[in-house]
Image (tube, rainbow, N blue to C red; front, side):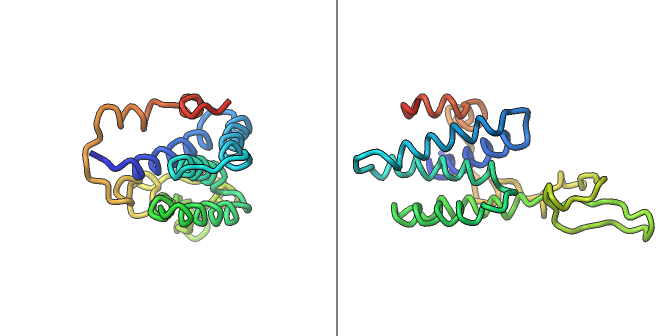
Amino acid sequence: MLKIDKLLVLKAFYLGYQIREGDFNKDEALKMVNRAISFYGFQEKTFSKSELKRKLFYILIKCELLRHEDSITNLRVAAQELAKSIKNAEMYFDYMKIVEATIVIHRSPDIVNRSEYKGKTTLYNSPAWYVDTEDDGFENNISPFTAINVTEELTSSQTNFLYKVSLLDIMKKHKIS
């Protein structure tokens, strides 16, 4: 059975990725994530390690949502510091391994030189026309699971959580309105 921390990192990655790349309202999702982060940061109480881990989860979602933004460095630093403070740096490092493994490399035909552009791209510097590589665009064809050394089979409840449970469902479960 997969450890909960690795499952949370995978869920944060997939939620952020799906919202960023899908047909979701990114601004509304970002407001929801910010509300969740604030819920664990501005109340007059001491939070348990479990509650702070939830905050880290939401920060990681935000990191993935804003992955291509200039402000991402400060957010990643905040995630790393929180992870260290709750003695759970592994969640942060696992997320960063996924980031590294899922850098998209597009190849674009260069008609003039009859070669291909093979550099790393973002939304801001991608060639005007590109095609994905045979390896689905991920560098070295590494999946998020492989990046964090997940070899275990997921249970049915873990599979359901990872692929079916929405951000809103999670926030309701955490009693964040």
